[in-house]
Image 1 (cartoon, rainbow, N blue to C red):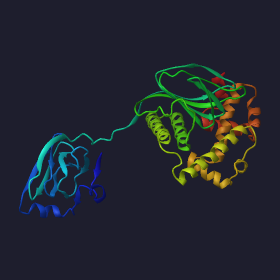
Image 2 (tube, rainbow, N blue to C red; image 1 turned 90 degrees about the vertical axis):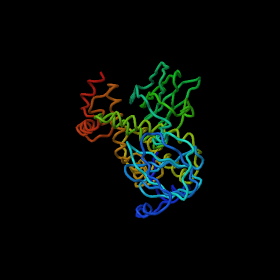
Image 3 (cartoon, rainbow, N blue to C red; image 1 turned 120 degrees about the vertical axis):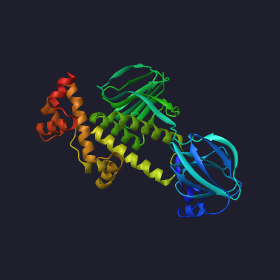
Image 4 (spheres, rainbow, N blue to C red; image 1 turned 60 degrees about the vertical axis):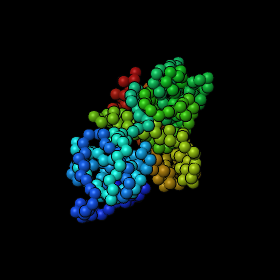
Length: 383
């Protein structure tokens, strides 16, 4: 990466001078030279004395090093003094450029290097392909017979619970839990009788990075990861010209977030303890809402059951989920209504009453606002 010149990041190599000194320096007697810069290959010099440098015309990149191996790159938009003993080279950012330098003795050329090496930010982990991205709403006691495929697969449980079987172990994933299956790893999933899980599955390929620390183990997703997943789902619902790009970028961010959590020491600071406590409150609130979705529910009721004030619970939901607890309750009830419609045991009036809607018209209006179709249209699509 090319850095901006300032006194802090340049101090180990020299000093930045006031920009008005450039003209005065050019008028002084002594050794000086104007260099025409072109092409990616540039001579590497060793400063035998303090060396003055200034960009003349065009856009110039200055690369400096203390050991002739690890170079830092700066955009040369102001005059600098490079200390004796520092290695440096000059190259145009694009096309050609000119630069002036002067010193009490000429710097010695000690080699050359391709200036473009190190200019660009290199990624450690990148999602190359996204194959599937599903929000699964399964019937009670469902069983998936199992499969293995070359892609990585991530599963996140949004509601209920889900058994994940791989490598001879049966992991019970509960709300907010994740599991990652590696390439070629056989896995199956099922739910307990009476449990209708809702979960997200994503299959993809990556380049770079090592996700083995996440593979085939149950882990509770950080709240930030859950929020990213919800943003991905929102993009899938929106699906405009940029949604696929957004989903890929968000998946990359999700994996980096998970990898950072897995790779670093846990609870290093008091703030980490506080964040863990916040996540637990939100997790308990989500579990309570899920368990009592067919009951009359309010934000004060949920807050009471997780031992916090309604205002604090609202602040946590806004901070971590970007929605209010009331909106979250509404979304969970509407998701539950889709399950009830698929089961086909109640009519719409009965479903609205079971979910504590004041009228079936109120229920139908909220369903259409959320999913873009009416309950009747949804019923026809799944039967």
